[in-house]
Length: 479
Image (cartoon, rainbow, N blue to C red):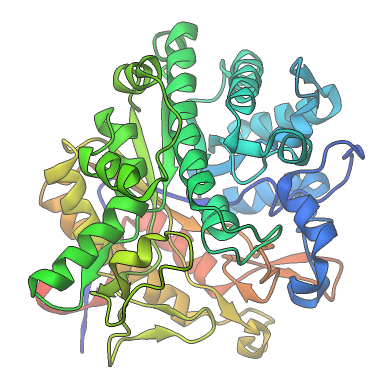
């Protein structure tokens, strides 16, 4: 199949992302400043691939100037990262700032701005302080919610004059889904009601921080916006039959709409309350809290999209001896013939970009949004190095091009999508997988002092940022 040129709008953002915990390392961390991820690594290190974890990560804390120089060389206009809540404070109850860490964040923000790169800052990318998990049960606690708002205020006061893009959470559904719903990550507790309480408190925390953002008047004073970064999985039913359609609807309700609806529409679906009551998992809430959610919706949304989610109606009876799980209403559908990333075990289906965009346009008022993460993880990339020591990651270039093609088709049709942020700027530590699957435009060479090398995809990304067009497979959607 031939390729055709796809035009990129001039004001469409092309950037990249990387979180604090996946890049910083433990330099400067006090013994009392572990995050949930740090604690998990310490308690359950054997499940992390080859023992790599957040302890050194990419050593961004000490090498951020080198990395920002590479961002500038590639031509990134925006870089999304997080502030590590567990490190930013020395006392979480009083929100006492750790000046050493806060100065480091000052330096990172200033370095980005000085190099023409817009910082996009997230307040929590899984970096819940371990102390608050151990003492209060983490996001099960309304007290932890109050401490998060205190933390957000200190961050806004410190950096609000320079940062224009703010986000409360990255993928707020993930940690509790792995720990309390599916019990596949430390500390392995299956508790569906606790899962739902974490979901709710993070939704409420977003509204509370939006409320604080308004009180600080950061939009008028500095032209800033605030949002949240969600990871709704575009959900497809096995068939058009009502029972399969219902299965997809239920998956979407529990995992996608539980965050999309309160953040954007200011309310939870009535159907969700009905089902929570039916299964005894209703979160604790007050009418005053629901009013805060109603009146403090986000300015825009970042959406992380990697793969589709396919479901079908259950083919076996539910075991009533086990606690309720949303899969009471569905089971996974393994679609024959799907294209796969064999290293990550994820389906590759670029049309998710278009389908999500149309949903945002039609169901969520065409709110401003952008792709906050999309990318391809591949194992053992060193085997693709050429004689110049550059990884020839043509598979990543094709992956990005095909997803961008579908996204820009949606933009052409009126979707209010303003940009694409690649995951990731550089290779980085992932939960459990560590450095096994590489996602970066930039290679982190673990065998050579974590030195950095641009991959072929970095030079390609540099080119499309500059030329505002790229080549993609010529199929019907290009017409």
